Length: 142
Image (cartoon, rainbow, N blue to C red):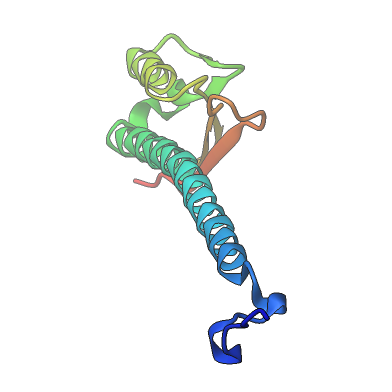
């Protein structure tokens, strides 16, 4: 005659291996969380780079506007069309060189309509197919 262990010491067959399944599920959830954090960090880096270029474009446009306020007698010399100054003017050329140096694929246009000025700074973020623009409109009055 065989003796059986008491019923309380045997695990029911339907619960066998449940700890392994729980461990596998927790590993999968942990892996998904880590992958989510890695994706978030990559996105954060791209947004930080984009914000840096937007701030630089804003600074450059405001710098030119301030220069135009100081030099109102030569306002027409600041017009920029087709990526180059329409007049040979050192301040305009120097500023346009700064835009090209500080922003990737940077270019600008300046449209003058009397005392109304519209400055558009354009740049191309590396790895992004769409160019970005920063537009500043103001009136330069004496």
